Length: 291
Ligand code: PDD
Image 1 (tube, rainbow, N blue to C red):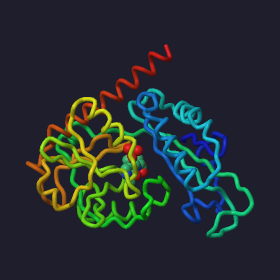
Image 2 (image 1 turned 180 degrees about the vertical axis):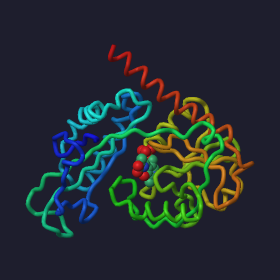
Image 3 (image 1 turned 135 degrees about the vertical axis):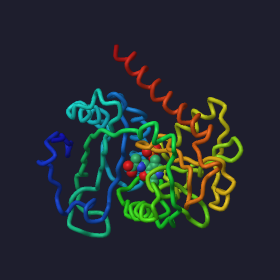
Image 4 (image 1 turned 90 degrees about the vertical axis):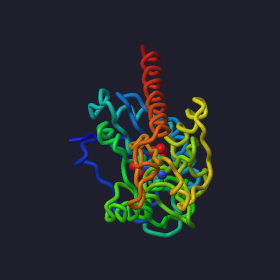
């Protein structure tokens, strides 16, 4: 039985209970983060918490985040995941429980903070090397998806629509532009340049995306942030997704048509290697600091 965190206490999951008046449950009034751990070492936890803080400010949820780093470590440890190759902490903060109104509660409420930890794995190399497929689906989300709210119904419907078409994942399309995936950012390679949508209210500014941009620039890999027209994908030589539990995930087929020659290309492989090297460097730095 996994140990979860709820409002300041650790407990077996079966003992965790949340009020039916919780505004997260009734209205989707809350935020979440998914932070990866590699062999017990958090990866970019500071950046995840910074994004969370931005969301808390936007939603005007008054919550002191100072204990969250310790809570993440504690959950990993209590669930026996400190040695796991890959694990993660899912954390969500809602405005709290209050009589249902569309406006904010007039009396102060305490936010509900819930978190759990679990293991995840990267696809086997044989699978990753074949690449994945994606289907384009209309993006029906609101125009502030840069705020990582728990309102994921449009994402879930889009992912399901892609699955129904037999694809592995969805590419959300707005006004002819391939915006991002249902749970990952989207990239396409033109020539030797890896292109991804700029940060606007229409994409989630992925932590993985940001790190890839930074590391690519450092390594001299050409990158560009600009909208990608779906029609352009015909000329893309490679495509891939980036995200916490996907890392760099090659896409070799969109809407049943091959991208480039239909195999995982060199830019995707290079960026994947660069990303995994950053993970290794983070682990080493943490171990050196702790020794
Ligand atoms: N998804 N875009 C969307 C819509 C996302 O939901 C996510 C993350 C990303 C990638 O962001 P990051 O690199 O910070 O993980 C992009 C999380 C992991 C999820 O919903 O499980």
